[in-house]
Amino acid sequence: MLERPGVVTMRGNPLTLLGPELQPGQKAPDFSLVTNDMEPVTLADYQGLALALVSVPSLDTPVCAVETRRFNAEAAKLAPDVRILTISMDLPFAQKRWCGAMGIDRVVTLSDHREASFGQNYGVLIKELRLLARAVFVVDRAGLLTHVELVREIADEPYYSGVLSALGRAAG
Image (cartoon, rainbow, N blue to C red):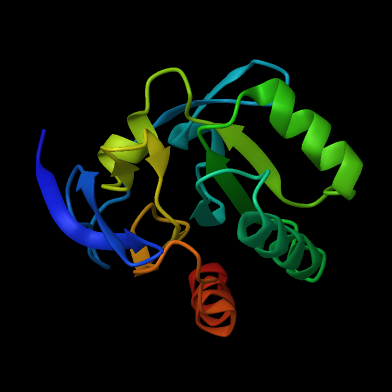
């Protein structure tokens, strides 16, 4: 597995990411994730949709909570064939509980806890923590990456307007 040391930091401390560095224009890699109801899903389940794949370390942390609530509010404004998927290593039961408590009803939360296939295939699995780095990947209807944002400091939020603009173009 490819190791990329020092690509992201946590409170200024460098961390190592496992997996490739993805670029816009590449085909979006497949993944095997689990829904809040323990059902398996892959990229093929979202074929033909424009997607924002949002990876976060854990929904139960302040920055991840703010980010997911913000994307949930933005998702309410999107066309029905556009989805925002928030992916973490949190257990599906914890994701379901958290979403219910926070009123998350537009963003789909998915767990990578079983295989870490999203983390490895998208190059955002943190070796030292077995958590996902904060990143956003926009995928167009043809399955191509059109926007990649890896947030360097895990405690920072993504550039929302850039993500939403890219998602609008991918849906267009």
